[in-house]
Amino acid sequence: MPSVRCVLSAIALLLSVAVQAQVYPAKQLRLIVPYPAGGGTDFFARTVGAQLAIQLGQAVAVENRPGAATIIGAELVAKSAPDGYTLLLGDTATFAVNPSLYKKLPYDPSKDLSPVTMTGRFALLLVVNPAKLNAEYRKAIQTPELRQKLIDAGIDPLESSPADASAYIRSEALKWAKVISEGKITVE
Figure (cartoon, helix red, strand yellow):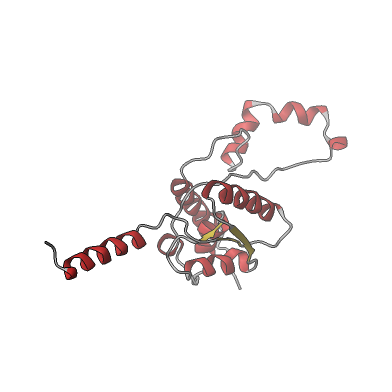
């Protein structure tokens, strides 16, 4: 017959395993948005946060931490507990432009932040007043020669699907590092 000490030890072991095996997420998540409230990124973050809350069965608090070209929000997440409960909705500025532009950042995007997923890919559009859009321009924009010139200039005239988040971040970091270096761009 097992001793009382053995039974209590077994119960304690089972309870400690049960406590350690909590399902993620066991508490509210924080989604940090490094842009001001009311803009496109904020709207997108709130939409993503609402869906995360539904899918994970846990509240998601969207917090805007704007400023310093996303550095303020990124630093907050980089210095948060590494428990997966504080998320950052970062972008090209956070992961590619800032490390290339600023000599010293309070975070290292490749060491302090880990990509989870690509949430979206947004195009910035070059637009013109339709009254000024003449037939000659319309014809020119559709020629293969001009399309190739746009591609050579780094403008994607065709829509493409999002790539893996890590690969995208690396490619953007390399591209922006080159642009900033070759342009001898500095921050004062």
